[in-house]
Length: 546
Image (cartoon, rainbow, N blue to C red; front, side, top):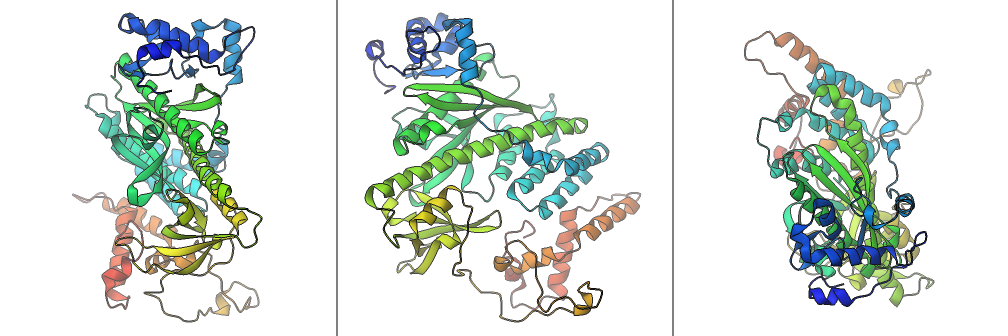
């Protein structure tokens, strides 16, 4: 429905969503819409609970009531008075929480989290150092993100001080924005901050709104095309009730716009996904979900709420915030997968998947690593505007482009086996043999030797072949190898002992783990490394020590 139609147009529209509960003879969506139309002319004189039914934010935009959205996210239930108590109870039970529990992400590291909490009560810096140590040793992306999030507890403690004026930009940049950046690092999704209108509202002919932060998936980089996967809106603790309610409505309308875009791109998949939205008031967060449950009827549900603790003694409560963040992450990825299904639908219209050796021409635009896999962003010629994320085993290198594009490493790629294309795009579970596209600059061919006396065998001999257990060692740069072989545990004991014995000196500042590693790296570069350009040697990696 076009939100820019005159008010008289809405009075004559009849839309039937078909959702009948109990003895209702009129569908749920029609009941909500009729009440919104009845209350709209006197909106300025309405009470807060009545305004929630209409939620008109501008003269031209009829929001929740006229979309229509069944809002079950409010425990007070502003729409509850429109239905019988039994019917309202049935609606709540029928449209329960949509996001799955992610307790396993935290529970499998329960022992490590308890150690962090124990350290935090004595010295927050030691707790952050322990979290960083576990992040470096983690074997999965979720586990690494978990400890990276815990590291931020050391910084920006003044945000929790009620005597200091905090802006919404402070909350975005220094607290929640920092957490979400760590959550979506090295993935196909990215965070986009600041007030701007989303791409989904443009697609659905809706006016849309500007929100503080969006989680987006790039669909066509050269034209700055994006697809929204989640939204977030923040407010200070002293925000008015009107502002808080309007922010919530803004988030729900943006989530509806995302769903409307999904319906256009992938109508068969849109009703199987819930769009996440985060409403944040200072250090408190509420995760909302929006679903399309029937043609013309959307349902908003409160999934979970959490608070980032402001004191070290309450660090255990931070686990609730971690659960919330991982639910938001999972839901955002689910939305992004539906965009991929839309691209597959476009290809299915033109091609027969049973055709032998079916392949598609395209080019890669970016390379990344996810869960110890090398992934490429692929832009197919026959599905322009959609970027697929495929493992290196699903593409075949053909050659470089004849006219290279500045500041963009692009190659021609041939996507082999359509069945593998579908599987890798949706699940990214399997990986096949591939051609190594990695530049060999900075490396020379050679052999590796190992002293059998150091192999650990009782007879002094174990195997003729040595093995390096290092994630993505095939593509690692010299700096990655340098960090891998460092005795990190021993360094922690050195740093701790040095700080412990030097704190009685005047003007002493504790050495951090990052500072110590930087000194080791500089010392090695000045005394050991033989390289024409030592600075270039170390800058081949992506470490924060550069």
